[in-house]
Length: 107
Image 1 (cartoon, rainbow, N blue to C red):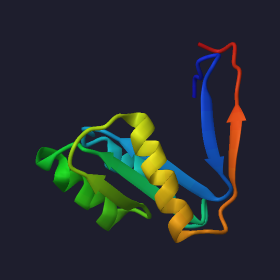
Image 2: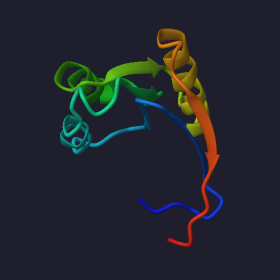
Image 3: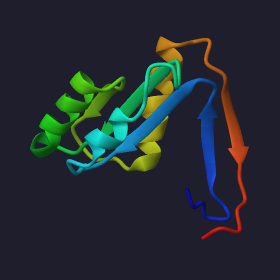
């Protein structure tokens, strides 16, 4: 993974959160790679992709370990991450959120 030198992100111990907007069919094989033992909880946030993409998120929910959280209007990656974090903390209050600032010379 390539990180911008000023990239900030939030990690959770044993949780994986992925915001997705207007996915292609390639997302299902990618998400299917994750197994139940990889993390304790898995969440995909559909950032308002719309009805055209609903079938992909339905497949993600049915065929992978991921739960899907959706809302109607695209509000951006930051909103999707905040929404996902809030949902994870509500459902799994023992998660350990950690804020890390990473610097990388890789571009």
